[in-house]
Amino acid sequence: MARFDTLNRAWMVWDNPAPAPEGAVLEYTRELEKFLAEIERRAFRMAQVALRDPDDALDVVQDAMLKLTRSYASRPSAEWRPLFYRILENGIRDLQRRRTVRKRVMTWMPGPKEDPDNEAQDPLENVADAAPTIPERLMQAQAMQRLEESLRALPARQREAFMLRNFEGMDVAETANAMACSEGSVKTHYSRAVHALREQLGEVW
Amino acid sequence: MSEQDNESFEMRSRALFQDSVDGLDMRIRSRLTQARSAALSAAHRGRPWFLDWKIWTPAAGVTAAAILGVSLWIGTPIGHHSATDAQSNFEDLDLVASTDEGSGDAMDMLQDDIEFYDFADKAANSGPAA
Picture 1 (cartoon, chains in turn cyan, orange):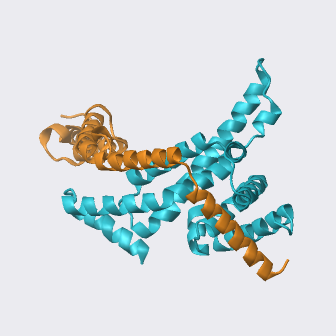
Picture 2 (tube, one colour):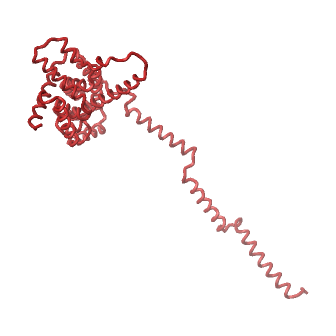
Picture 3 (cartoon, rainbow over the protein chains, first blue to last red):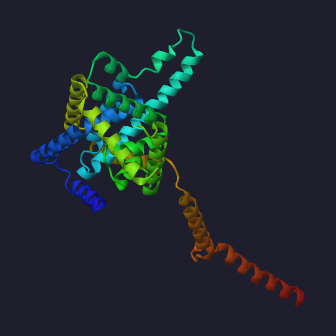
């Protein structure tokens, strides 16, 4: 039905190319703003889990927002979430590829070597050290940090499936749409991710 | 690893993630709000005028028509040669079959020659004329 809805909208645009009335534009802009406001923080944290660097995470989230509003704002609002996360994941993958290439190039370039300890540092580590918190809060932060590290160690598709299904609360069909794969693949990736994470984190976690 | 263990693991990880989302600092929140505003204003602005296909469609049509016209004017289409050949064949047939004076001369001359040779042959056989 969603496809027919999209098709109908396309025909409406074709038959009547006049710009949409101001009221309708305001309506969907408001709806889009509500959607982005609801999703942006979780999207940022997911990007941060994958990329580690908060500035890079902000960049990919902003880029995904721009692409969604520019190219897909006229699509039915039910399609926004999978589309947004597909754009976001593509952005994350692109950035990771660029980083890999840059790293390879930098190893051939003369210059000061990076401190491996510094590279392995996580921003959350600094936050936890800088601000004293109650023990329970500290334990939660540490648990989350361990979970993030384990998620980064997963293959990209497993990480994607786990975060979309578990953190974002998408159902299998929506996740399959966002990941551009079959529902069966989503189930397989998700199951493997849960298994691997539980193995890495141990029973105590 | 039982199904129940998996469920509790999923619930715990979800809760931890949500805590980390709720605990985002003001700097990040502010930058996300700015990013959202920028994206929405970009959507309002829409695409630049030169990327709008509606502007380029008439120009593309005119260009295509002009190219077609020039190619018809300068070049020779493939079918043109066979049409010319067929036409010249018809002209040849016309010349041969035509019954007007100009084109029938050769046939008339041939007819006259046969009559003359027939007369000359008879005259030779009948002996010298008196």
